[in-house]
Length: 75
Image 1 (spheres, rainbow, N blue to C red):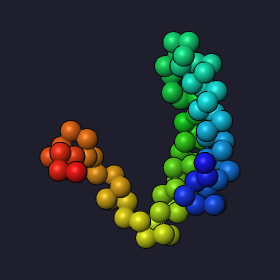
Image 2: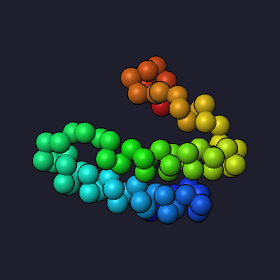
Image 3: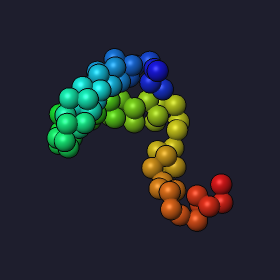
């Protein structure tokens, strides 16, 4: 699946590949250190945040925690 912004597709592909490797070769074997893909995630996240700003998506609304709140129960 592509990213929400075409400019972020390559970064997403790199992060997804790293995550799949980490999950299968590390996490499933008991190594829970998440730092292997942290650089990929940071770059992809920065790209996404800029793309969301460019598309006038309010980041404050996206970052609101809903799980376990009254807002979740209303929906």
